[in-house]
Amino acid sequence: MTLIERARRGEITEEIKVVAEEEGINPELLRDRIARGEAIIPKNKKRELKRLVGIGKGLRTKINANVGTSSDYTDPEEEVKKAKVAEEAGADTVMDLSTGGDLREIRRRIIQAVGIPVGTVPVYQAAVEAARKGRGIVSMTEDDMFRVIEEHARDGVDFMTVHAGVTLSTLERLKNEGRIMDVVSRGGAFLLVWMIANEKENPLYEKFDRLIEIAREYEVTLSLGDGFRPGALLDATDRSQLQELILLGELAQRAQDAGVQVMIEGPGHVPIHQIEMNIKLEKEICHGAPFYVLGPVVTDIAPGYDHITSAIGGAIAAAAGADFLCYVTPSEHLSLPDAEEVREGVIAAKIAAHAGDLAKGIPSAWEKEKEMGIARKKLDWKKQFSLAIDPEKAKKIREKRSPSIPEVCTMCGEYCAIRLLKEALKK
Image 1 (tube, rainbow, N blue to C red):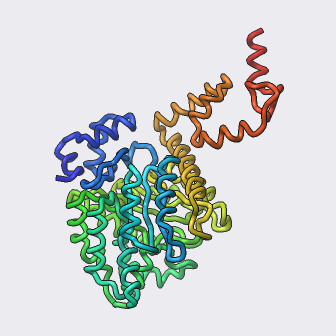
Image 2: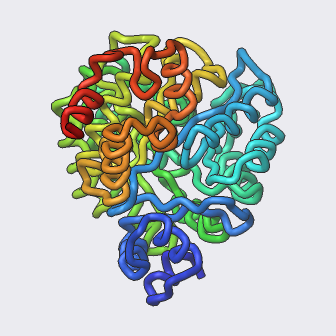
Image 3: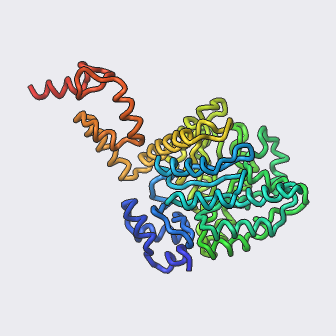
């Protein structure tokens, strides 16, 4: 029996107890939300996690960090390091998106290296293996796809992205739409190329019940991928994106009815004024299923700073009800990120998630703000560092220049407003 089925029977499982305590909410409330499909706890039954993560309604906004090799840059050690750096910086999950080197070995090493949920996109491996055989991506078979999906599940993957909403009908919408960027989802593109060449429907959609069986057997959470997510602001919220979202809502309900946990993946490039609408659409169409968004990036003209453009979008999305933010690094659209850029991406996403949690009224988020305000009034630097999202950087910046009066900082020095008023009130 799966977690969602046990929740429907009224059982408060150990996972629910642990997550409820961490989130500071009533376990019965969390159980009800899991039963309804409004919250999830991704955990493969074959894997032990050091930290369970709850994603969904009423919970803190979570963040994911992507790692993984590319066909141009293959260094397993570097990717394991990046996964550890992401976890240490505060990522709630990591995804291995490797397409270069020994994909099985890299995935297994990342799973062993971190104690948080790990996600993958199995179709990457299926496509890469077909290409390596010299027959090209289009030669992968339906059985290849499902074989790899089961392999990932057996390895202990906690959640996996499956682009089951990429269909022949959504492809027609795309052709008629006239997008600037067409498709930027790598998994979505792999499947579309296969479908066009083979003149067949997407097996992940056509044989969705087979996918459900695997997910159910291993207790894998399905992350229904947005293969038609916009890759340019001018493509946002178009007909192909929305048709895919409608399909994902239907598929999510089928999976939930079968006892499988589900979340929905959302758009990556969205102008600020459309973000709230996108979140509300997903919540309505997908009956409150957790929403996992990439960014969203709010402008296309800031390469090198897309951790900032996505943090702006992520904060607005989280405030509007998004549950899970996929980080973006400064390298987005430019290069495979290094470990420091992974760290920057995680910190930026954490800031966005916390800002969103304040808007959502999450009590623990407001408690931290209260503690920081008190620490600043007291000029308690040690406490301020402990509360900071990035304590190391905060401390380093303060220590860069020594103030003439130890209790203040060099921004104001002897004219520190807090110190002046404190002294005046004493008199």
